[in-house]
Amino acid sequence: MSAALDLTEALIACKSVTPADGGCQELIAQRLQAIGFHTESIVSGPDDFRVSNLWAIKKGQLGDQGKVFVFAGHTDVVPTGPLEKWTNDPFTPTIREGRLYGRGAADMKTSLASFVVATEEFVTAHPKHSGSIAFLITSDEEGPGHDGTVILCERLKQDKQNLDYCIVGEPTSVNKLGDMIKNGRRGSLSGKLIVKGVQAHIAYPHLGKNPIHLAAGAIQKLSDMEWDKGNQFFQPTSFQISNIHAGTGANNVIPGELKIDFNFRFSTESTPEQLQEKVEKILQSESLDYEIDWHVGANPFLTGDGALANALRTAIQDEVHLETELSTTGGTSDARFISKICKEVVEFGPINATSHKIDECVNIDDVEPLKNIYRLTLEQLVA
Image (cartoon, rainbow, N blue to C red; front, top):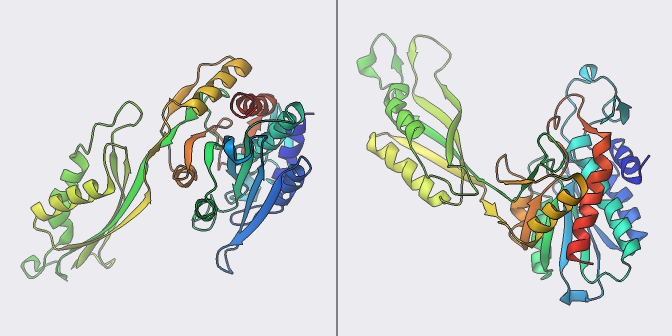
């Protein structure tokens, strides 16, 4: 059994449902301290939602003049769901038919273990490496995301800690290990819209104003709108309604207001301000009486096709002999925070197919190659 697989199993055995860390970061810190890393644990968040964060760094021979390579990720996992639906206990790592099962196996304890073992092997082979290596780990990625990576990034910015390259260990592979790298992500803009009407008895519609009827035209325009055309890295910006609610529950009352929750996943071709302006222009064109609250969950970021992406693609080609695809699809991740303080950020990890599902798992045969890809990437950039 490989060292990376051993450590993956140890991490899965830690019950770390967000925001709990379950001892994962202590285990990682001990391994890193043994090879010369300075580690720092930072606890943040309110008393009822304590978040564990780990920052660890090993300076290279060039000190502050060298490049800084960061491995980033999260030790927290999503809730298990109904335990009776799991084939085995989700926090008892179990190997079955060539797969390792357990909550967090794909998202993202295999990546974390591979980070650590890849770094151990690299430091042993290159004791006088020129660049620095760092770890940025949180237990608040699957939760609200208010007290984890964003806190660490703010602190690093205040400390003027330079970051050059970062791999976030999200499970990005689709069909085979190494077939996809995320080199950017779309932004997320949410809106809570209230369209006001006048409540009345449904038998006397002339005494009321039905906000559902009033908003119908605007909903159609919003659904049909082309917000932008996207670009070579991003799909066109999309608009989706997630929730609509109106009425008292009675079938004889015209509702007094309509509530609509919606979300944009937007490309670098649009800004939140532009999207907000377009939405409000449509609402005003329908002469609606409305209120709207906006929330920017994430701005889009793009690393492009730089040194980090090239090094990772070369490592994938050398290890698993695949031409990888650069992609910006999917939801948001903590890379959105790191990209504000790091020059190049990509996401790469195991196959994503079972993340957050019952019987989450990874292929045993992918663990060693994943670790090797991380090590080969280090060798190209900070050796």
